[in-house]
Structures are given as structure tokens and as C-alpha cells.
Length: 290
Image (tube, rainbow, N blue to C red; front, top):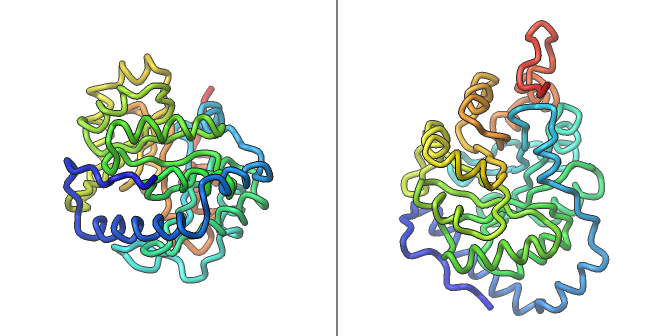
């Protein structure tokens, strides 16, 4: 079944609308090439699930780092010309990242489920599949490819779709990361059964502007509810420096998702170390849990 996305209540910038249009065609083709039953059968040989939630919860860093892998941004173009997903993932691991986010969207980000598979077999860190999920078949494909967690964008899905997809993801042993951009979307997420991880995206999908104060505002409004659920909170977009991470820790986030500023550096491992302040012992124990 192809779900009737996108959410009609969401205003989307034209670039995002185009991505969703292509995604619908891609999912239609996937259904023609492979049945859901055949995707389900692939799970018997899929890699063992790593515990994405516990990895973030028990990280020695606060906030912990989810380092992202992508070659291209539809807004900024090529991010890293010498793109080697495995080499990048290994550099992230050596630098101190807790988890890795792999963008699998092909048309606009040049991502691939092949990247996810290759990284899964070579790097032990838990992997987040970052995709425009609009149909259950994508969830099964991600699990068969080695995903340990899957991003769900509340902006694109109805309440029923969100709940159904969360249940499928958790049933398969993975963790659902519910991404929100506004207080209205966060309130929808808080009504879900078994909400475990929320990602607050500081980018506005209507015009693609970024304001990192979005994370502070949403946490100030709903921190108690999130804490009562024991949910992990991730902040993403617009974060570049150790000071940004310090600010996110102060407002109550558990993790940050960062990609572009790391991928643009010649030495990715050192860039991660500097972000986490692991490269200079005189900087003290920034971010470490005692």
C-alpha cells in the first residue's frame, strides 16, 4: 500500500515538494519490482540490529554525536567530491561519533541503500537510515540493508501513518526517530504510543531557513512531557562548533546530528575530535558524562 502523503497541512518549499514527488515514483517502482513479502523474507539474512537508543543514552558525551554521511545537498550542491562512505564512516568512528546517519535518498542527495549495506558490514556503530519514508516497503528495505534506526518526518505523514510506521519499525527491532520542526508537530509526536526518540530539526521546511533557537523553544515548552516519557532528544541543522554543542547540552538535548561541516574538512577524524574537544586535553571534560 502506498500511503497518500504528503500531509496536506504542511507547507513545503518547492525543492522538498520535488523530492517527495520523485519519492512517490520511486516507491511505485519498488512495488512493481519487489513485493512486501519478498522484502520481509530478506530479513532472515539481514545484519543483527544494534541498539541505537542505548548507544545514545550511554554515550560518554553530552550531547552525543550522530555524524551524517551524504555526498550532495540539493541546496548546496556537492559537499564532498572524494566521497567514500566507508572511509568517512571509519573516520567518524575513530573521531568519537556515537552513531552514524546515512542518507539513502538517491535523486537529490545521491544516497543509496548500498552505502548503508557497505557501512553496516565494515563499521560497528549503530546506523540511522535517513530517508523520506512514505511507505512500509522502505522500512523493510532499510532493515534488510542494515539500518538500526529510521527517521520519520512528522511533516510528511498523518497521525495514523506516523503511528503505523513507528509500530513497524519497533516490531522489526529498530528505533524510530520522529523528526519535528514545530511545536504542533512535537505535540503530535507526544501522542504516539511508544515514542522513544525525537529529532528537532532547526530548519523550516517552508523556506529552508535555519534557527537553532527552535530546539530551545520546543524543549522549553515540552521538556517535562519528554522527560516523563524517557525520550531521547536530538537536535539537527545549523550546528557547527563546540559552542553550539555546549548550548544544546544546556537546553537539554541528548544528541546532535551533524554532517556538512565535518564532511567539508580534509581530515574528518580530526574534525570530529575538535567538535567533541577530544584533540586538546587542556580544554577539559566538555560534554563528558561524569
